[in-house]
Amino acid sequence: MLSPKGNTYTAYGKYREIAPFERLVYTWSWKEEPHNDIGETVITVTLADAGDSTEVTMHHEGLPTEERRKGHEEGWTSCLNRLEGLF
Image (cartoon, rainbow, N blue to C red; front, side, top):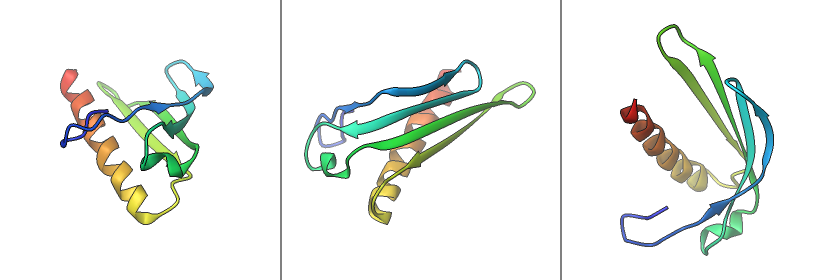
């Protein structure tokens, strides 16, 4: 990830569950400071048929503070909004 200030951040993890066209569960950790103090968190993405589109639901577990939850929510919202624009 490249921040607006030009800093590069690396996220990594392992897949825990892959159910094609339905569900994806994976771990998420940050490599660089100051974000790596969070430790490992878990992300679950579910996909649901919504007629002519697909409903994407994302749940990010294990974020330790409200500030961290808000920051990740902003980041994920931005990513998902850009993804929508690709289609």
